Amino acid sequence: MFAPDYGAASSHIKTLMSEREDFVAANRLQAARISELEAAVEAISTERDEATAESRAAALLVDRLATSNNEKEQTIEKLQTAAKADEVSSLCREGAGVLESLQDLLEEVSPRREAQANTVQYRPSVG
Image (cartoon, rainbow, N blue to C red; front, side):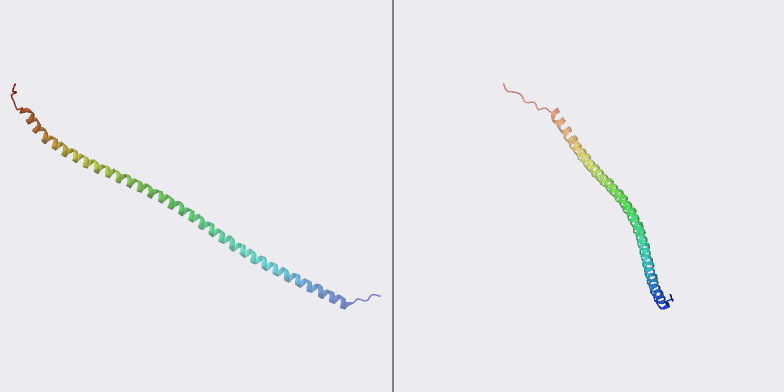
């Protein structure tokens, strides 16, 4: 009746084993690709973390530089104000010197005028 056909079974088993080996090989390739992608994700994550740290450091540096710049601008404003005050003070001293010399001139002229006023020349009127 039925006699087992070991040749067909053997051929079928070989086909199944070949398909299994192809499947296992495909799984190994996929596993290798997944490992590569995981490594790439890890590298990108590390780069992102480093870039974030650098960005934060740069932001802190910008803040420090802005603060330093503001302090320097305030110092410059104070120096300009001091320079203007010094200039005004110098002008005041010059003005005081001019006033003093004018006062000295007036004092010299005043006694002469008083002397002239006291010596009134009498001129008789002819009538």
